Amino acid sequence: MVLKICFSSLLLVSCFSCSSNGTVEKTNEKGAKIQPTAQDLYIEHCSICHGSDGKLGAAGAKDLTQSKLSSVEVQKRIEKGKNGMPPMKELLGSKKNITSMTEYVLRMR
Ligand code: HEC
Image 1 (cartoon, helix red, strand yellow):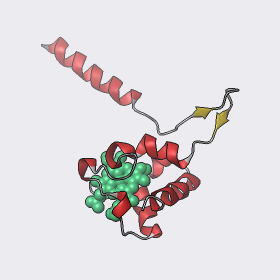
Image 2 (cartoon, rainbow, N blue to C red):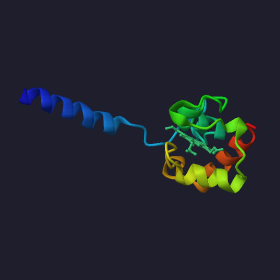
Image 3 (cartoon, rainbow, N blue to C red):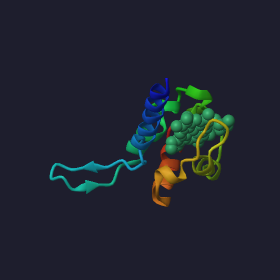
Image 4 (cartoon, rainbow, N blue to C red):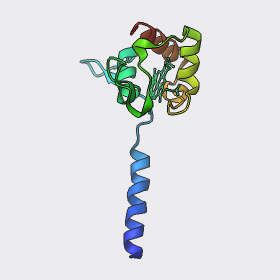
């Protein structure tokens, strides 16, 4: 019994440590790192809930093609989250990524 508990907590810990640290690393054919595009970041961090076309609505996510938020509000929502929407500031890493993600989301309409 004790062993079983130990084992499952071990599993839990290893699950946490293997979770993505948010950096999508892409390399070109020569193996050099290239900057991920907004689409890469979107597929990596957002499509699970919003779907690749923005319409999925999983976990209560809003349809991004129907969103009426201003660009400032979209950016704020991405940075800070709301209810089931997790804050994405840390994950996206840089201001540049947040700005290009905001533009990407606005283009879905
Ligand atoms: C864990 C699921 C989840 C992930 C991952 C997620 N979202 Fe969301 N998102 C939500 C939910 C839930 C809402 C609705 C929040 C509310 O208003 O209650 C939402 C709302 C939004 C809104 C506001 C839409 C509106 O009109 O109110 C934007 C913009 C948005 N998400 C963009 C993104 C972007 C960009 C990413 C990736 C960087 C992302 N989301 C990742 C769940 C998620």
